[in-house]
Length: 336
Ligand SMILES: [Zn+2]
Ligand SMILES: [Zn+2]
Image (cartoon, rainbow, N blue to C red; front, side):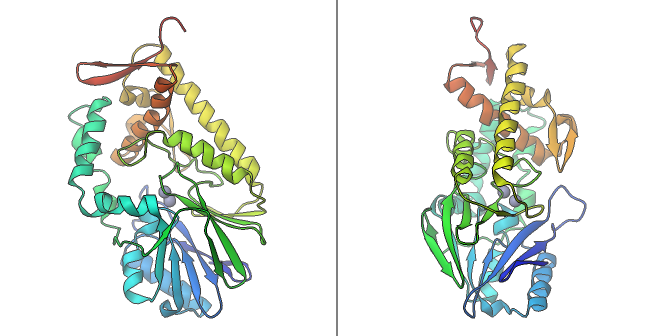
């Protein structure tokens, strides 16, 4: 735990399963006038909760002093503990409207989403024998979420005044459809969630809850934060960093490289999104890995990431999409 600037603490919350592919998350605790605000929560495990409690103790903050919890997006590492926190503190919880609307199908009545996910994976070439593993991969992390419907609905453009700080809510869809960043213009801080991380390339995938062009959304959201005057980025993973604009450029260039790699594969012949994914390398927790070595959840994220590139390429006419033997195939048209 570090006090980054007076009144803002970074609290490193560990992944629930040490050594797994799940990663630590940074929550941020922010001092107001006798009350505290928490940005993101970590996973819903006793272990994560006990670490959070001990960090609060170190600062002399009680759970009852937390009056506001802002969630950058609804992934389990950011949103998981919110239900538990609500039980033990007076905190009101804030989240983007788009994300709030997706909580029920994602975490409560999940049958339809699981069926849609299976249909998407089948359409895009995931072999029947692998399908149940990939379809159900997210159920593993579901157990780390205590879902709750936030009472404060954000749309982007609001300001949250808290003590010395005035945070502007910036809607940054892409990594998730209702992702938000918090921008503090006086201190030139950006709490970037998973939108801009110093080393990791945030996963952007097309899936039943992503909207039609998550990659287009992500690029636009990168350009949006690129306009902001930021001295220090406080990300939800890894470490704080400066030179945000340079990192945004790297992320945009990385997307171009991935797009080229995917186009390179479909130039060789018709491929499903699954086949494309199996022919390009993947980076997991900093290591380059072949598709075959990925765990089921990462395989699923990989297929959906390829799809996020292939679908706009198809919509823009750079690749053709046809259905053959029940699967969707992408190929570069002969004439181009
Ligand atoms: Zn995330
Ligand atoms: Zn995350």
